[in-house]
Image 1 (cartoon, rainbow, N blue to C red):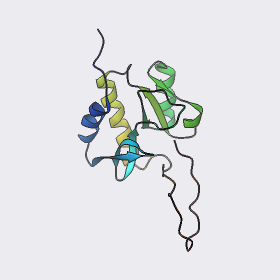
Image 2 (image 1 turned 135 degrees about the vertical axis):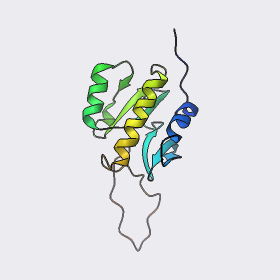
Image 3 (image 1 turned 45 degrees about the horizontal axis):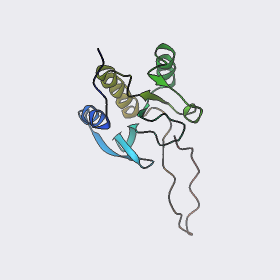
Length: 136
């Protein structure tokens, strides 16, 4: 039996039920955040497949998910250095998505992973340039 189509509306509903979760954007795409830090977003890098979601989780958990279910969870080279996994929304069940969003919320709430920050659009002449960071 095919499962229900997962959209960002579904992701939003599940994610915003978590304590302190808020809706925002990351790299110009819809995102869910906790404490101002993204824990799930629509991937903006061109290497991600359409209809995917990027979720921040520990490297060990990510590697286990990709090894166990490569049809659902995947990585592209651009995302390898970041504590995150890409999800094919057409293949994940809603209960698994719920568990994954909770895992990501806990990871980010606990301060896991290095910060994902968007580069500043412009720099003041009176300030040194911001450190350049890779964007997932």
